[in-house]
Image: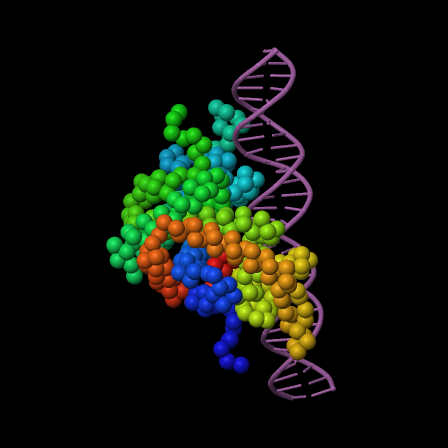
Length: 182
Length: 182
DNA sequence: GCTTCGAACTTTACTGTTGAAGTCTTCAGA
DNA sequence: TCTGAAGACTTCAACAGTAAAGTTCGAAGC
């Protein structure tokens, strides 16, 4: 039997051909954009996951560190706010912070000016890991885009943000599931 | 205190500004592409999730149905193969199939010509749900891309597949985590 | 100054995924 | 034909996430 060695993942073109076979009124151009976008995102996450694993942290932990650093000095955020930014439930955030405190990546203390609130901060170690992860990520991203000219990168970014604006207008709520990498 | 109403999710531009503030040697053009891609993907998943929920199935279940239909007639795949295509472990696949059999979306039987193997097939109901989901998804995708001209869509698809080729060459293995939507 | 409401976080119970161990079947060699 | 090895799936224990109930503190009304 030739042709289906491991039969694992069909190529993008094979997949689009299959879609057209099974669902006639499909615009292959649209499908190509959507499918490529999705696959690309997945592959990128795999790559990020490998890189953060080298640093001994998970992708999930990296996201928390990112949110804290991007918040700006003094790099403090409450669990609820973190949860919103990462698209998690508060309960999940509590658990994730538990683990990260245990690993020494972040600190957790009560806000003495309002004892209902909790303040999560980043430790030196956490900041160091974030920085390392950023270095690796930017190298990877530069490699990823190496085939695109400066002008193409600009056009690509512009088109993607145009699409993004379209979805965000359509679903202004939630922000849902920010758990990704950006 | 003005300016930070709910402090939930920073806009894309705010986020990129924060990156530049905290990590100088960052190419904002690259970061814009990467961040927009990631956010867009997330938003799309939220949208798909809402649509499949209307049909009474989960996104996870939709993925299984997609894989089966895309496999082509007779729409049969083994759990192991499905797991590879969806980027799950075989164990997770077993459980997911359990649930879907219980819900009448797929069938599971032993391959009598090789009793180690199991054959998962799609039911009429499963195929119907897949079709409905496809109809909704294509409407959504068309709306998403409505601001792009035909020529722009072509360029966008081409650039994305070029990036995809680049990552796939770099990590030919795994295919990792296919769990997404494409 | 109590009381009640609401906000912010945590706890609890449950769901879905993973990794590792286990079962069953096939196939190749003695 | 028996035995051993490999493959395909399942089972089990541990972990991360969600939803809903619970806790604690602060603030607004009476």
